[in-house]
Length: 165
Image (tube, rainbow, N blue to C red; front, top):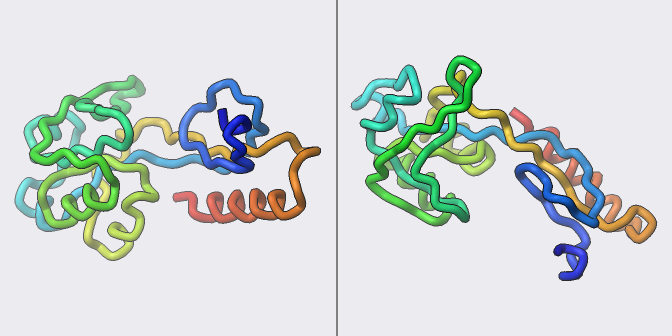
């Protein structure tokens, strides 16, 4: 419970659980699959999610073990089981491994934004991406919020919305 822990402001990516905090919508965050241009030249660009089951992958755990990656195929959710050649529990080294050509990786878009911008990674299978995760800013009750906290919340919301893809 954020309130009991004395946290005044939190950013949550994903569905909200019942909370005593006030939620402010801050947009959505895509889940993307990426690979290096070198790996794409070697394997070809996958045209459907099932292909990933036979391609080298880098598994980023991101707080929970997931050996299957979610996609939407013909309007229906689908999980594709991947066989990672490398499993990493932090986004930065996982993205670096993908940029080095070790495999395809699945990330939240912000985690690989700079690699994509620099051309080190390319997003693939965009048409099969699952629904984006909602992004929310959680704060204490409005009457308990200081002006400084209100300004921080508003600035964070503006920055998150400006960074939408």
